Length: 204
Image (cartoon, rainbow, N blue to C red; front, side, top):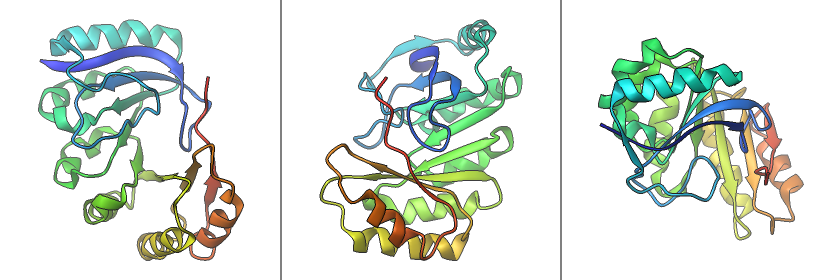
């Protein structure tokens, strides 16, 4: 059984593809206290779906013309064993949003996914860098949430680390509403990286 919060067509609210129409499969369960979808909601147990039931729901929702299927949550990789048998039958390209704390599970899903969004969490830097190294040849971007107290030095340090892996890696700085130095943060990151955008989460 898969634990799912919702299967719906919606506007992507964050990251490199903000504003795009997507079919969202929002997974319940998370191993850290954060939401990948950027939407306030339940990431507890969700609703139980048999694998075939979820696939039927996705195929029905795909009629609403989303551009990709976004696997979000929660943390989708926590349910990879139940999810894997369905991936070849998905009706649209797959986009995985992950908190990048489970690098050992990425190789299993990697062949089926077209786009990867890795959310950076400072407490899990080792796992994040391992995940990114595995995906360096894939179409991947990094989501960097910025709080009011985030220091320029922390952003610079991360940008240096990322540049060792890929200087052309897209990085999306996502400032909270209270952040007033987004331009300075981008300027620091651009010293080391070629593609840094500032994209606040959409509130729609």
